[in-house]
Amino acid sequence: MASIALKTFTGLRQSSTEQTNFVSHSSSLSLPQRRTSLRVTAARASPKLSNRKLRVAVIGGGPAGGAAAETLAQGGIETILIERKMDNCKPCGGAIPLCMVGEFDLPLDIIDRRVTKMKMISPSNVAVDIGRTLKPHEYIGMLRREVLDAYLRDRASSLGTTVINGLFLKMDSPKDDVSPYVLHYTHYDRSGPSGKPSTLEVDAVIGADGANSRVAKAISAGDYDYAIAFQERVKIPDDKMEYYKDLAEMYVGQDVSPDFYGWVFPKCDHVAVGTGTVTHKSDIKKFQTATRLRAKDKIEGGKIIRVEAHPIPEHPRPRRLLGRVALIGDAAGYVTKCSGEGIYFAAKSGRMCAEAIVEGSENEKKLVDESDLRKYLKKFDKAYWPTYKVLDVLQKVFYRSDPAREAFVEMCADEYVQKMTFNSYLYKKVVPGNPVDDIKLAFNTIGSLVRANAMRREMTKLVD
Image (cartoon, rainbow, N blue to C red):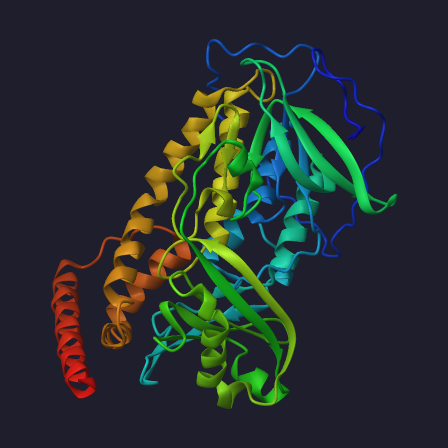
């Protein structure tokens, strides 16, 4: 069994020497400025580490894993990131809020498009233009996951993270509170395509390995509902690409998804056309065909250059933490309902989890325990749980029927709705509204729902 070459430390198995290789991303790395010193709060019973640093493994190299590894390395933690596929292209819409660009010091050259206009298109193809309230500097960033993920991994590597191209298999739990976790993985290097069985001993583990997380299974984190996202990347003629240069489209209707939406999002030189569903997974290709049909005139003449499918979690797992193992990103279930947003929350959860470890270890000097990691969950839930609950309610109210979707699109035409929606999305802060406008919005929403219910009854009569 081969083991990764890292400094050995007292009480753990000697590792054999082995050089890790990985391919760097072509973009120049913009190293984030070091944030203010973290407050150290290690548990009193946490033993001090003698002649070594705390060692943490991050399983998964997406936005969650990359952000976690960067923060750990920046805090002095000996960090190892294991990613099975360095060029992974997840079927993701690729939208990020404006605040993420600043918070995570992302260079503008990894953002393919700055979307300043959106069209919300109802089941009857009524289109509402959204974006009138955006300020000149505001936009929604559209990027490709393979570009963002590689950038964050490379930046973590530049800060000292050891990046391993490997497939995590299983984990042996420690026999007591101070013994290491033993990770088993297949290491892919120049020795051949089959890889080599390898082991690694660490003090703590962060599971960032997606919806099908093996780390989650290792700690019996429980199951959750998940959606299937299906996406095609379509290369369209230049004149049609010009139409989408700063525009994204969202289609709602029973034809494109019974419980989600279809989308056409612009990328660097192509568009991403996709949809998703939780309740009718076996019909996903039928919904994708309907999404292409709804956008037919605008993507006609296009060539499909890539097809992607992937599970997307619909709610947080019953368990997100056990001992010195924590889940983040999709592995924890951090994807919002209604909008399906996950990139920002993945990266944010990774950073928060890593910060909790750095703080709890007194900047790598002490072993952490479950109480240290639990502070990450408390902080994340306090900041974002209301957002998840509100979007859950919106999905249940407005995605239940086509008349309700018509009402939802009608509501989106309201300028006050657009302003409040974009402010909360772009900056991830709930901005207090105007009481008078809030009352008007409540009445308008009720009116839209009443009309939707009346329309549904009439449609039912016609069918009967």
